[in-house]
Image 1 (cartoon, rainbow, N blue to C red):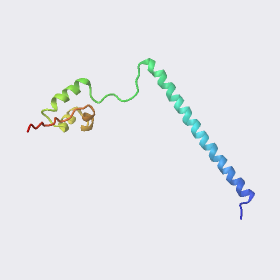
Image 2 (cartoon, rainbow, N blue to C red):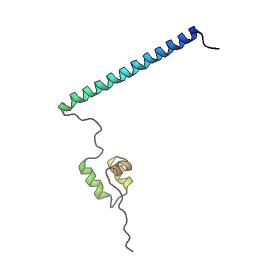
Image 3 (cartoon, rainbow, N blue to C red):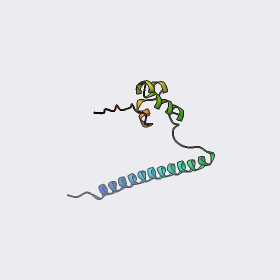
Image 4 (cartoon, rainbow, N blue to C red):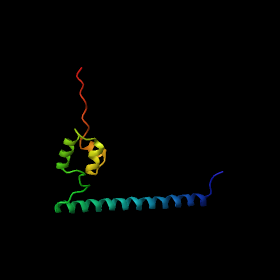
Length: 101
């Protein structure tokens, strides 16, 4: 037939414990996010920026753009110790051949 009062009370207690666990989890995430935002706010006045340093300097980008006419992307990537995909992100691509018919 139906569930007994004891079974219902156990289910309610389990649901309550799960709710409390999830609530604590989300409270911790909220605190962590707030701490991260505070740390970022403190670091900005000191002149610090987040993120990675660029893989190539502006001078290296110009060199790579010149080399692309005489070397393969793989060789250029090896020279600058980056991947071909990184060169492509900097819009350094092999020149397209133009065919005038």
